[in-house]
Image (cartoon, rainbow, N blue to C red; front, side):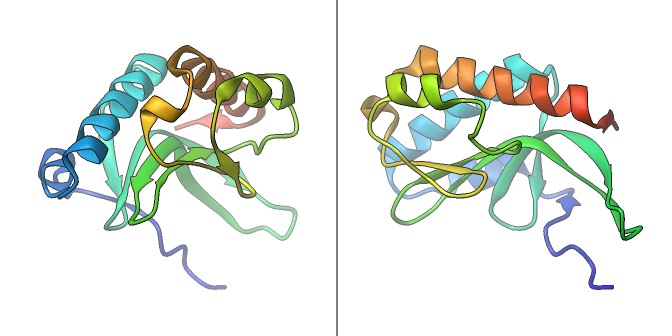
Length: 140
């Protein structure tokens, strides 16, 4: 079985955020980090080299594969900020309609800048997704 590439590390979250060249993206990431810290009650950790994650959960598949992964997090990418909504979006259609300008992947919410979305709706989306994950998985 292949090892999970994205693992929690001891790298500095502050240094990573400080390294973001785009000042607006850096400020937006700091706000998102604050929302996630308030939501989870946990300090940020680096996951891999470019993901800021909060809290963790343990999973185990029917195949027997098990591991630990972040409960929520984000990554400042060149084109956008990816926000990890781990349970996906099937339960959050109503919130997404109110959110503002965004795109979604399987578990990624992509925003260009925080000003494009309703921050209170984003906070609720993160909070509700964390609640779903905590009810589904054992917390670390």
